[in-house]
Image (cartoon, rainbow, N blue to C red):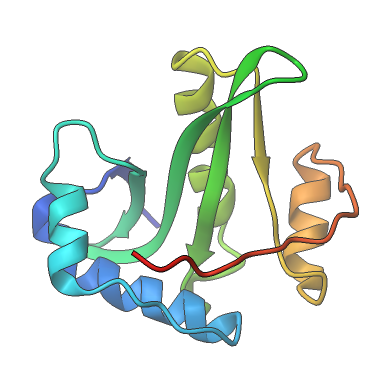
Length: 149
C-alpha cells in the first residue's frame, strides 16, 4: 500500500467532489458545493480552506479540509479541521491517521496553538479514532442560522 498525502490540486476537482458528496451522504446531509465552487478553492492563491488529499495508486481515497481562526479567550490562532473523510473501501488502513497527522503538522507550521474539530455524536468509530489520537471531547450544541444575502 502506497499512500501519498498532499495538497489538493486543481486537477483533483472531480474525484474530490465525489469524496465530498460521499462524506455528506455518510453524515446524512447534502454537500452544496459544486464543481465551479471547488475549482475556485483549488485554484486560489490564498484559499478559504486548505484541502488535503490521500492518493493511493492514482486514486483519491480521502480528504481533509483545514481552516484557521482566532480564539479571543486564549488570544491565540487555532486551526479548525472542517472535514476528514476516508472512502468506505479504504477505511482501516491508516489513511485517516495520515490525513489527521498532516493536518496537525500544517496547523503547527502555520503557528496555530491548537486544532479543533467536531464529529456527529452517532459516529462511534470517529470518536474512538479521535480519542486514540489524543483528542478530548466537549459537549456543546452547535447552532446555525441561514442569512440572506
